[in-house]
Amino acid sequence: MRKEEVAGIIDHTILKMDVDYASVKLVCMEAIRFNFAAVVVFPLHIPLCVKLLEDSNVKICAALTWPWGSRTKEIKAFEAIDAISKGADECEVVVNIGALRQKRYDVVEEELVLFRKATHEKIAKVIIETCFLTDEEKVKVCEIAKGIGVDIINTSTDFYSPPTIEDVKLIKEVVGDSLGVKASGSINNAKQAKLMIEAGATRIGTSYGVEIVEGWVEDFPLVKKVITEQEILKANKEGVRNIFLYRGDILTPAASDLARASGIAIFCEGKRLF
View 1 (tube, rainbow, N blue to C red):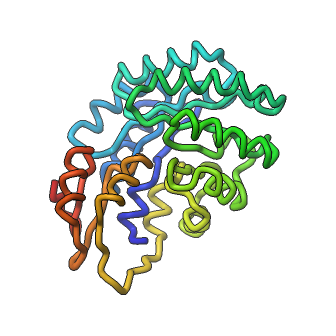
View 2 (view 1 turned 30 degrees about the vertical axis):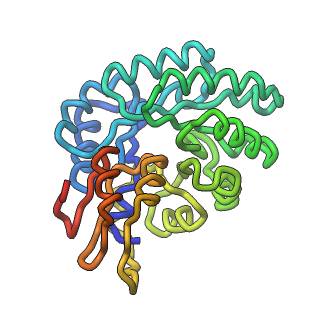
């Protein structure tokens, strides 16, 4: 992957107790500079991010019920509705870990159904906190989320133990290409990010987006890349908002039309085509 492609799947995150205006502004400016996929912020910072990210391609992801997910299903749905009304493009909610560990899968499903309805057509992400779950429980919650139509499974809040390579591989095996897979937690450099991407991650949640991109060693393909309509469909499903082309790459007419209709920005050698 090229540096620009890596940047395009990074969720630049700022979820700390001492977050202030200057911190949010810095994260947003970094996201614009590197063209990250999104900034992940607490709901109260959404209005500020809307102003700072105006006219950019960077999306705003609201971290809901973070980090414990211990709110009722109605409150989680309300927080999603409220965040979207304030300008959030994506919503990320922590699943009911207690119910999941007790194998009360009906409770988990009811919660995620309400969350999915609340997000409407916005990107819906579910944090499953893999460090607390057995493989059976990881598989089950991924199957529930897949059946409901969630867009992205997130491994962790980074509040507890980070995900393993095996966690990401397992999630990818369950959801395939129908859902995106976000790896989050202690991913602080390019090497760690590369391992997660190779395992199947389509998004990287981190506060070290700048370090990851600047430390990335590019692996240039030897053949021309052809972007088809199917690849645009897949990118849209995974919440990818930017696609980068290089001299010699080909974007088919059907793919071009679909990208425009889906609001996906196409870049070629640093310049935005549309």
